[in-house]
Image 1 (cartoon, rainbow, N blue to C red):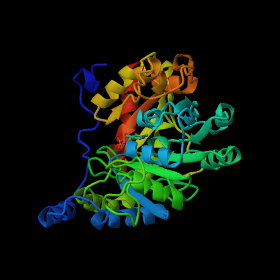
Image 2: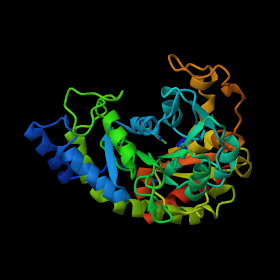
Image 3: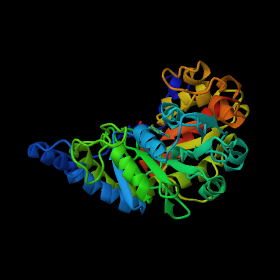
Image 4: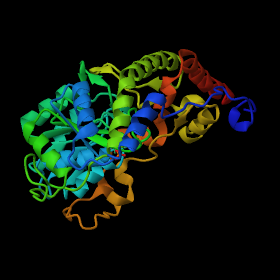
Length: 403
Ligand SMILES: Cc1ncc(COP(=O)(O)O)c(C=O)c1O
């Protein structure tokens, strides 16, 4: 026990992992915009439109539209899909709040469907049972950058006439059966918030191949204006969700590195899976359900406290972080346990009285949150192969100390 870094022993991993990464080309691109004095984006053109074309080409979609963040990207997608008050939207409970709170903001009802224990993504086999005549959309979250089972999800959506909005906020550059995440459903939504694999500090984008959804999302993010319409002509209840030219050039510059960085994270994730599967009590998530590239926004593994002499996940994660592995216990509880849902703090939003989240139980999510899931963050996944070995040996060191 004394040897553990948490108790003052030597750290297993001694260097810090920086994020974001940038060089003089990023600085110059932003400086040029600063000098130009054209910082804003009143007509959704200039560098913003250039980045949107680049990102659409990267994802293999017809359109991409930037907006202020990933939450708004999801909001634009949901509203453009034509949901009405009281409609139900299927979401996983192992995700960031925005996946479900944007549903509330649209006066719709988030319906939580449990995750698959193999992947921690929405369990495709459980979706059908949750569909009612009021269901209008499914929001699969490619959690951590691991692809959801999109064939099954799209097929169940087709049968029931539902829209599929991919929450790809962790999935920049990741692929399902060779297709970029975000390009498979009706709309794909990404975040450029500061922790994300592609970042401009804040920001978001939607991608789609659907002309109608594109027109509506373009209008909604630009105060309800329409293409070809006048400046003071507002057709839809949108808002100013535009990003700046400063963000756009930074994103264009960062995008040039994304493919290479994704390949490094993917290779390191594959190697770490190999290493960790040799440790009794540690299980990597399954990667054989159609995922072809994993973006490893988070590297998640399953921890079994019984194999660590009863050491709780929370204590284990603290010890591992002290060893210098950039890790974290992840979400401490399922999303539906938040006061927003339990107390129904829905304010002005018209969610039916009958909705009661105190009865929701998703056992796989509960196990993941309370006992099992440990997260290593994406910037650490850009480390060397040797550092992946150090991550594994830090776990072995903790395990030995529990004997
Ligand atoms: C899964 C998921 N969806 C949506 C979002 C929202 O993105 P943003 O923070 O850019 O609004 C996040 C952000 O962390 C996320 O993790």
